[in-house]
Length: 89
Image (tube, rainbow, N blue to C red; front, top):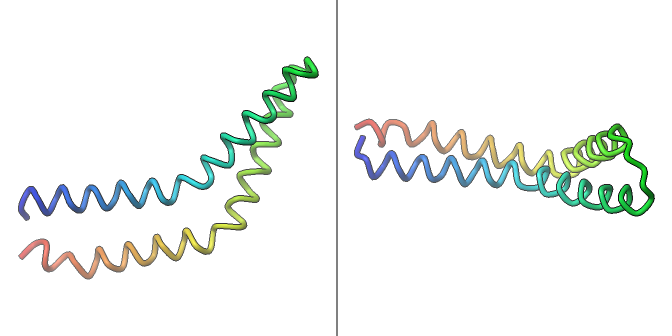
């Protein structure tokens, strides 16, 4: 395997990780900022409120985008397995 091919595959893997991790992380980030603003405005400093709301947002995001994300992951893995003979030889 040439270094260029290895870097290409590493790049594809990093892009896939960004695609798979982006929606849940973005949802938790937005919800965390909003909860932080509300807690600062109301002076309620309870950490469990922020945790529960972020956990619910994460679960909702995964429920809504899980089928798409899993389909992309399976497609990427299948393509990678099919490219292995070409990468080695």
